Image (cartoon, rainbow, N blue to C red; front, side, top):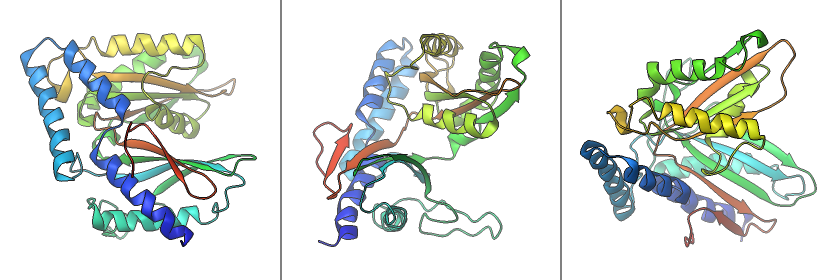
Length: 296
């Protein structure tokens, strides 16, 4: 079979799956959060969410009307035989998926203010690459990035003299100001780095981490725990109503920083967290991560 056709025959059903069904870790966490709420209103909101997911599965429709823009986070082996073709293949998959799933065409050119009508555009789908030496496979994380989560996202560079107290201060300013725009409950990603660019990338990476994982440094892990405890004590629940839980998780990712800078970025992801990971070997055979028991 033609390699591009074989790739499409797997990737298109995968994209359809990801936009219609949440990954296993997110669904399990939402069920846990529903059990932890003690108000009848909050329980009713969660029940409505789960009913929406059921209907999406039964009707074969996306589980949120804002199917966002497609982002791909790729770990590509340096020996993967189709490395040079992958970007073009993914862009064509987005065009086909927009037409056939269907996805809402959201991509607008900045200066002409025209919608491409096929989900692609300048640098869209967004692709971030990590090259893995001496490997002949590829891992692709697909993420449907909706618009509402973007409003609260911010990044700022502080002086180190401000100290670590700026992290919760900055986060709480964001959450209490525009945090309701992100359709809570949310996943909070915090990036700590040396400038706005790398802190912002790290904050998005943190959002996409599997639930239940933690920062590798014990102090980073403790920061995640404390921040989750504090944001969930604000009295903000699902859909911004009163409740016990604003966030599914707080994830922190960090890098080294310059001696003179202390950069913090915050990204949010809504509860309709449509991210999924698929791996291909050199012969384009696939393996799914998450989605237990599913075959494409």
